[in-house]
Image 1 (spheres, rainbow, N blue to C red):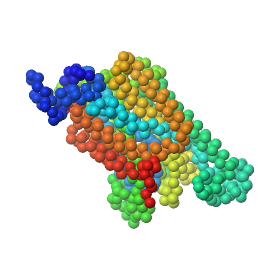
Image 2: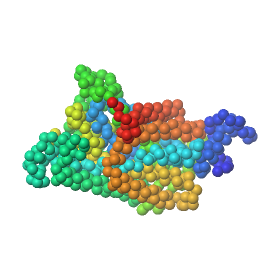
Image 3: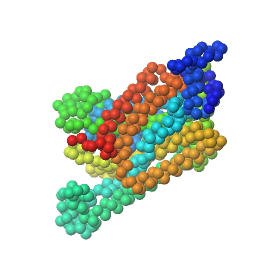
Length: 601
């Protein structure tokens, strides 16, 4: 794409870093150093073979006096998405196992992610593009980066949220965990009468449940009992298929996809956090509150009963060896994690913030014909007037991140942990273990037993469903929109299409993902869950790596006046160091989970 740099607006080219090459002859009125900077960006953009930006005027930032809705943005929707599968499935299990003292990992994770979110939003404010497109603009070019990110995104293809959302729904239908041993919820006499199995055998199953099963050395369960369990797990699986397919409906209808997702997440935040806060206030002891929120700064009870700072579990209940893969996955699920944070840039554009107002948004295939997305970003010249507006937009981003997203993420990871620490801690200390998809049902069961009220069983299971199912929607949207935006900007053939035709590209990828996801759910059963657990390491690596990539994008492609200051650079560097470090610590356990490394003796 020769000559691309000549078409760039002056604001896009100002102040690029000097490279260690012989600078070109300086045009009249431009220093040799500035000419070298201009030449670097020209080669950067040409190497990327991505279309040149056009120029426009930076809109005025919204002000609070125009109403609360005018200043609400992606922070609210992403806070709703942050209360997700990890917070509900893994977070409670980790805190019940290790106690509240490890909550500082969640705080550090959220703080470093906040710095990341600001920087990807900075890029979108400047040019109206997703940061994912910005990655492709850098050397060695889009073909290389496409291969890298296809590998990373492969671990986001597994529809585990839909499969896990089916568990609380099935439990509400059956009145117990689907596929559970019938002796855990029926008397031997009832089970014998229902199945026709001799009561003596049923009694032995009830007294020695670990002696029965399919593992080596175990006695097979009587066939009628095994059939009961199989029917329930089959029903659970079909519910998972239905939930997964149903999650695509909001992405197909409704106009602008961002607006539909925002409405779903607002409802989720109100219902889920409202109910969990009610449970926490009414049924959780002040000591548990203190342990969870004290854990955010490493403060908690010690073995002798006194309180003090200790950032890792100690005392007789502390595990002999820390599972760093598990703790790393816990850090990954706090906030967004993985590639999910990059969605902020796309949603900033779709919300119409900054130059996103000129670029447009992605519309749904039904009802979105009036929603348009430009093929390329649009930047603004740097002037005193535009700099004043720019600072207003940055304040808007900071407010959205600190007042909404940060608070929502802290509550999202803390409140489920409160319930689990209060009611499941003793079970973990007694040696019981629960699969991730069982945590919601076990929490509901504990509340039902505590209150002797069946209503809490159903309401807690409904809460678990509302946590998991909507996040399958945002997970699918994030994955599909990343690659839609890349194709829409980088594929020259698609440039022939009008802006409202982007919805067909989105829908085609969405259909492919629907087929893939259903095939995975049908043919692999629970096997993806092992990959999902190990993929926590990949998610941490992805976040750490893209933090570096984002910083490079902002330092290379943004004018000097708009680049992050030292505080922003330190914050996103801390994000890279934290998540790459956590990924490295968890790598050996992840390899053992996948069978690629022999178990430790």
